[in-house]
Length: 125
Image (cartoon, rainbow, N blue to C red; front, top):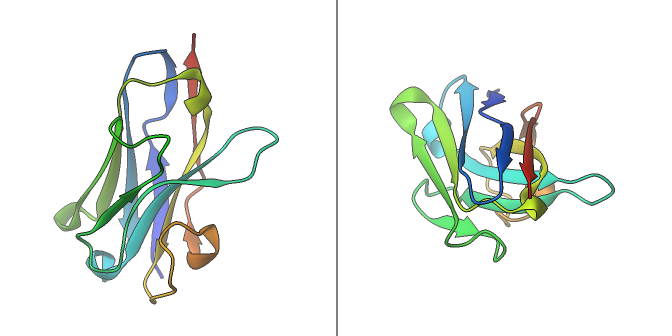
């Protein structure tokens, strides 16, 4: 079973950038679908970006497309989320998620069985 550990969160002013990392332990990382989700206070967890089970195709929420980029380094068992042009509404706890068995929707939190502990991102205006 893969375990996930996020890092790279912090506080930044609007317009700034952050790069989140998600380090995975265990085997077969390259065959996992990987997703980034976020949850703001009082809101449901929402999809941000992800790779499907091909490990190649990427998906983005409309709210972040063009500003955020997901990437992965299978040799280092790590997936990244580069966040540019950050806005105050991007403030949330960001979670990395992984799933080996095909379960349908990359965008659905229910598709993933493995989650990291989360990393806080705060964007001030």
